[in-house]
Every structure is written in structure tokens, then in C-alpha cells.
Length: 552
Image (cartoon, rainbow, N blue to C red; front, side, top):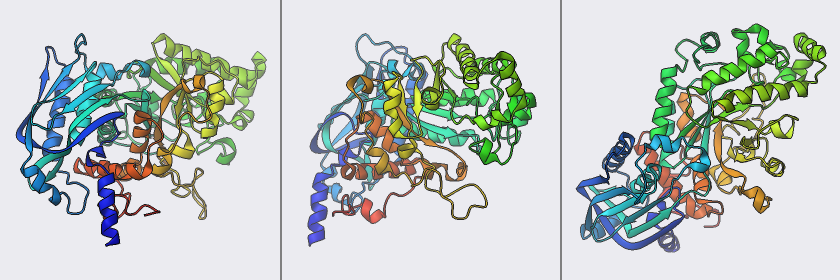
């Protein structure tokens, strides 16, 4: 009896319509059930509607027809049958832009600079069966509203229905950058896996795919004019992203409201370039690798060589043509000075010019960044470029803070825009044990495992002044792929990465206990759409919200 009373209490507290993820910033609900008509239609009102908007509408209608997600309660919705048998029926959702707004492709709106993206929307779902309405000032906002609308519905015994209507939502993101980073250099991921990840990102309103496409282990990106890098640096000829693959991925992402920021990490993490240009790389393959690199194989660009610098500038220029994004990450992390100390050509170049390594790095950075800026790109960098090295970086360049969340304050004090990517909160590869060989008792360097609850509890503006807090663009989860591949991609990312999606859309301070039932909902809905998420709890707990909390 005590447990039954507890479950009844939780059923009252955990609102079904609040299963939306990310939680809208303003939502008002009623207490009526509403059925979805078998002939339900989404009608787009306007002339010159872009094809990617029509495609988004089609996907939404398909999800409504195929999700068939039963409510996560005991009985999986059987108790709702009486209420929906007498409910009104919704037959239409009308989608339109606000007066004066122009129809533009979702893709072009998504590829704007983060601060210029408009993702706000207004959604109304009446309880009386009259048409639901979705309006926004941009097609990107309409896409976000369609995503929310699709999360309202459950299925039981052939009926698709929503609970707690009417629903009125006014929504917009707290932060303009909400991302996910995937490393495709340690292990290769086919295009289909990347597309499935992009789909999942769109379902929780993530808007930035940070593609760490190359590294010391492999160079799978085929860049026109520089095709020898992939020809000699990819794991195999079948493990290459061609320009048409990139175009496909960029277009697929854009239609789902996602911008693609590529990263070509330099001057470190570049050992693989020696396969095509051995004269360009310092200490190639030096051992023990632990002395000369953070990961094997050792090797970094000979940044004091002007030929190498100009080559990378030209490489960036060519790569920028493949990616419409305003953002282009040049990396800059984990530069190993011991590698340069033993590299005779680097030491000779420094001595010939009377330069220090830091001065050579500054020159390398200015030349390569300038090449991107000429193409209209804003270089993004890892935190070492502003905290460790004395180099010239534009204040427009976003800085990804990854080593520790404690370093955010120092970056903010220097006046740089910040993307949260802290390993102590957002690294998905942590806690899986050591991947290096001959180390049976080893752990991952960033232990322990980073749970969704930890990342959800993160405060993006902790210890920052008001002016410093304004520098926060948002944040992202990251998957470094030393121990990940296509076979475990889904369950390593999802649903944990959804926690930062809500954190940076709704804002910090969410309640973990009330968030968990909604995250279960996200996870189960993902599974109906072909994404194999990891279980967060026994299903017994998922069906009894709150009953498995530590204090229950």
C-alpha cells in the first residue's frame, strides 16, 4: 500500500506532457486528452516554401505515424483508454511564418553564425479539436516547433493521443551553440552512422556538429588539391570521406537545423601527414611515444618552416570550400615541445631566424588563421591557444575549454567567447578503462564515467561576472573514438548527450528527479526511430517515475 501511494504521488508530480525534451522555456497546459485523427495533416501556409521545410513536415508526419511510443507508466497507457475514447480529435496543424518574415531554407538559417540563428517558435494545441498552430520568424524556428509537436504524442491500442491539452508554448534557446563532437580519425564511421547521429541530434534540438575528422592516426578527409593526404593517410581506400560524402553530410545536417564545423587540428595531432609529406613533420614516429606525443604515433608539423605554414594555409583554404559554416576549428591543443627539441630541422629553422618556438607558433597561427578569415571563416581553437601559448588570436575566435571546467574563468577574463567542452563534465569516452596496451590496471585519463546527471547539473556561468557570462556561446558533449566505432556509437552517445541539449536550450538549474522520466521518454522514442540508446535504469523504474530515486 505504501508503494502504491508513492507511485500515485509520482504520477501526479511527473506531468506526461512535460516529457518534452528539451523542456520548453515557457509552457502552459490543461488536463484534457486529445486524439490525433487518422487523416491528420500538417499544412504549411505560404508561397515559395523551401523544399527542406516540406521535407521536415514529411518527416514529422512519418514519425507521428510510425513512432507508436507507449507511455512510460505501468500498463503503458491502458489507463488512458477511457479518457481518449471520449476525447476530441485533432485533424490539422497549420504552420506559418510570422508576418513580414521571409521563406528561406532551413539549411541557410542553420549555417549562420551562432549568434545570428533564430530558433524561436510559438506552438498552440487546443483541446477542442480545432486546428493547432505553429508560427516562427524563421524556418529554423518552425523546425524546432515541429520537433516539439512530435514529442507530444503517444500510442495505445491503435490510438495516437496527447495528454494535458490545451498546450501553449513560447520557446527559444538559452544559448545559440548546442553541439556534439565526433572524432572520426581514431576509428572510422561510415556516412550512414554520421547521418543517424545527425537525426538524433535534431530530435533534441542540437544545432552544431563539430567534426573532428582527422588526427595523427588517420586522415580520411579527401580535400581537392590535397588528395594525397587521404590516399596515403586513410586506413583504407574505403574509409575515406570524399567531397561528395562531405556535401551529403553537410546538406543532411543543414536540413535538420545543424551546422557542421570541421576541425583540422594543427600543428599537433598531425603525424599522419608524414605519410604523404615526410619533410613536413617533426619527430615522426619518435619513441617512446609517451615522451613526444599524447597518443601514438608521435609527430607534429614543422611549424617553423614557412613552406609547411603556407601549405597548411592553402590546405585550410581548400577545406573551407567544402564546409559552408562560418566556423572552422584549427585545433591547437596538446603541442609537445619535446618533439621539437629533438627535431633538427625545426631547431635549425629557429636558429636561422633567431625565433623562439612560441614566436614560430604565433607566425604559423597568424598565417593559417588569416587564410580562413579571407574566406569568411571564424577560426575556433582549443583552450591552450589562449591559456598556454603567447599567440595572436582574434577575440572573435571561440575557445573550446576542454581540460577542466575550472579553466573557463581564465579564458573569460581574457575576453574570448567560450564553448563549454570540459572533460570533467562532457567527455563521453571517460570511464571505459585504459585503451593503451600492456596496462592491465589502467583507467581512462578522465575517469570516472560522466553520467547524464553530472552534465545536466553543470552551471555554464559558474564564478563568472555578468560581462564574462555574456561570452558563453553554449557547449557540447564530445566523443573521442579510441574505444568507439560504429558498433557502439549509439549507446555511447545516447541518451547522455541529450542532457547538454536541454542544459544549453532551457538553461541550467533543471531538477534531475523530474528530468529523468523525460529522458527515459527521449531514449525510448529514439529506439522507435532506430537509434539504439543505452538503458538508464531497469524498465521497472522507467515505468514508475521517481520510485528508484535514492531517497524514494
